[in-house]
Length: 137
Ligand code: SF4
Picture 1 (cartoon, rainbow, N blue to C red):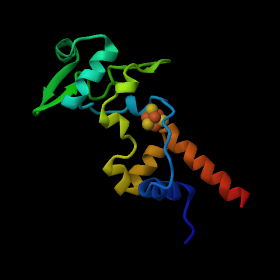
Picture 2: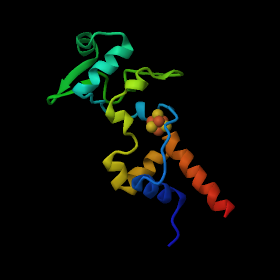
Picture 3: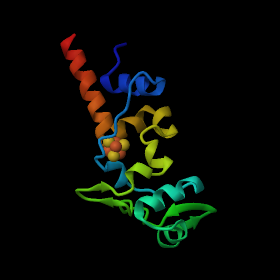
């Protein structure tokens, strides 16, 4: 059975045969969810913001079931996302953001991955290239 460009991109990303490039479109910053921050990520983010780690913790973090997270609301954009500017802490963004869209739930489930392809510019671009390759063959 012939595979769609989307499923080709999905399996090639899973196997590491395709490189993903983030276009910093901000779509993943604006979906529902919390952003969790590891202990080892505090100093990098604090530095970018020009804060001491203790100040950063005080101003921007809260504890949720023993895990640190940015103190934004579940259904609002990330507190460090600015329209027109994007992520203010991009170079030191947490692993959770850095690893998008390679989250287990997206990699394991083609339906979840199809949803990502609807808004992530990096994935959209890979699908567009695969479609073009298909037309050119
Ligand atoms: S949705 Fe994709 S391209 Fe856009 S910022 Fe997130 S990872 Fe990058």
